[in-house]
Length: 194
Image (cartoon, one colour):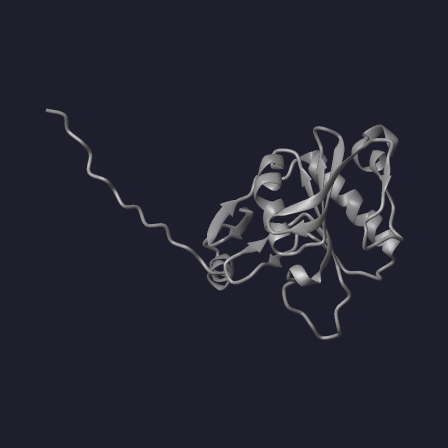
């Protein structure tokens, strides 16, 4: 006679942004741990590698230099998306805010989102990009460190972008809502071009 294991019902605990922030403040998540809350689930983020780190440092400096403080730039800061999702994108260029408004940015504040991807490429493309589209982020760039390319996502439509283009070393791109900014891809992704 064959024995069958009883079916186990596993209950998952979903968290709100407030609970997530309280756990971080209380030290439950650990000081060195990086995490995001996506639809109530805590997702542990991979450590940042050397090339990812330097690309992000360079992008931050370039945005601040060219935009001359006309727009706030957030590097690995929080983005609150509803009551059960808080992300930590690599870089966001935000709309200017009225004085005194100090809340965590929401999708309505974002002009441009950039994710630098080496080990996180699949996660960024399959999970984060659809989430950004669903929440109306107007433009997203994925900097693919390994492929030496930048994919630009425009025109959010439900959970996808209807306009997706890939750009390689040798090209220069300008964000749709920041036409005064230009980015030479080789300066970001080709260490010899520095």
